[in-house]
Image (cartoon, rainbow, N blue to C red; front, side, top):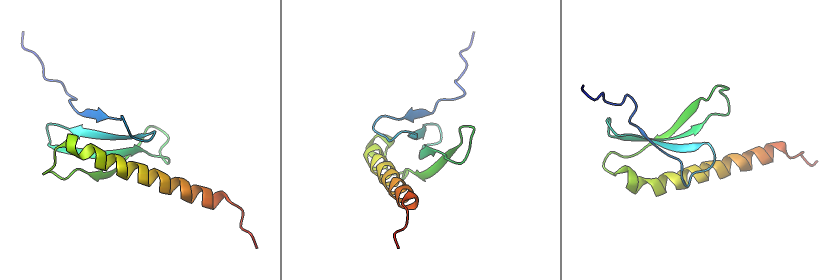
Length: 89
């Protein structure tokens, strides 16, 4: 009996990322995507924020991706808070 190849062999990396953020390391395609769960899609939609440069291995890119994710999260939170504050006149 021959072993079947797995249909989904991507590696998902969530450690060190804000809630809802992850790297999808597409091993067979030699690419990695920094993604986050979408606020606008009700059924588990994800948005790709950026891709890893092909010359850099995924494990070497994780810290950079974490910095990007935390920066996006902080800026989004800042904008939400500014929008929710009443305007003073």
